[in-house]
Image 1 (spheres, helix red, strand yellow):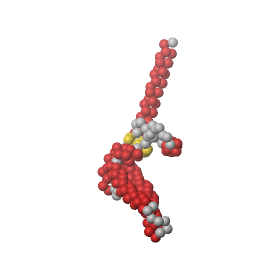
Image 2: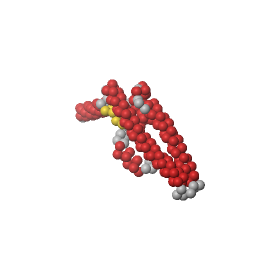
Image 3: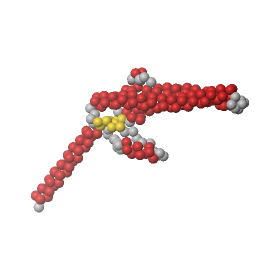
Image 4: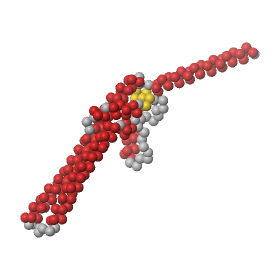
Length: 201
């Protein structure tokens, strides 16, 4: 009877030791795996880096100049339109001023459309340039730290009123949990800041 109890006790102890070893091995494997994965928030990099702030300041200054020019054209058009009321319809002076009014209105619309399109193109080009630098720096940092993978982890901001925006987030927000991963975001921002002067804004 005593022998039986001793044997059962030894078996139970062996099972506990085996389970404990397997758990610790699994934990080590998990820790090793997570430490090999990096994360970067692209939106945070864009928001916090000096180069993007400089670009935005320049873009706002350019936009303000365009708005000022548009306001001048708008006032000139309004003055010409008001002046038409004092002229006899069909007279040479009336037709001359009417032609000038149409030219001003056309100039206003052309400048408005061109400046809007130009802004969209320049923003897209800037975003591409900055994003390529973020990718390059991220790869370099990952290699230095021995990471095997780096994931983008920008958290969506709720609530979202626009259903299209929500649908886009659901399609693109893939990393739901990243505890234990190496966050490279601050280092990427710091590296971007170091080369701010190299960017052609």
